[in-house]
Every structure is written in structure tokens, then in C-alpha cells.
Image 1 (cartoon, helix red, strand yellow):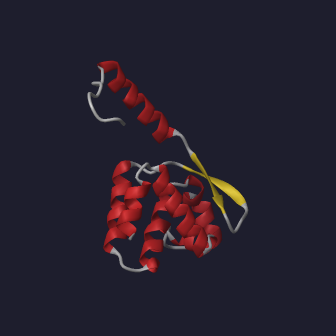
Image 2 (cartoon, rainbow, N blue to C red):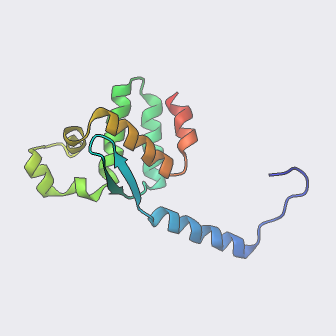
Length: 130
């Protein structure tokens, strides 16, 4: 944006911002699962949940702990992973273990990062991770 006199936002533009945000939040995200060579559909994480995950990542010092936060993010953003029948088939007690059992570590790190990026705070999340 150029310096100098900036244009003020109108009421209609504010309303349009809300509509645009709602459309973006409701639009599903298709993400490639590298080890499977196929995609899965994820919902975009809600702002509050993104903040929780970014805070967790910021507090953690190891990649293992970051992967744990990403497993949580992946699980909550994919309705297929939340199906009780899947948990039964995989014989998991902890729901987040579904992600650990199905996905390679590289998948978890890649998909988790993509989901944070889809939330719109990708660059900020990268700063927190580093």
C-alpha cells in the first residue's frame, strides 16, 4: 500500500469484509496427504482453536511436541477422523491417536502446517515455531 492519503473504509465495505470472512471460514480445504498420494477434505480451524494451537507450539521446544499439537489440529479439522467406527476399526482409545496411527510423521507436519496456513496466520505461526 502506498504512503500518503489512505482511503477510509465505508460501511458497505465493512459488511463485505464480514461476508468474505464467513465465506472463507466455511470453505473446506483440500490437502494432499503425501504418503497416500491422495487428498482429504478439512474444515478451516476456528480462530480460537488456531490461537490455542499456536500457543501450544510456541510453548513447546521439540518437534515431537509440535507434532502432538498438529495431531490435535488435524483431528479436529477432519470429520472423517472423528467417526467412532474408525476409532473402533483402528482400536484406539485416545481420539488423537487416529492421526498418529494413520499418518506418517511427515504427513502430520505438512498437513498441520497447511491447516495453520489456511487459517490465515501462516507467517505468524512460522515465527512462533522458530
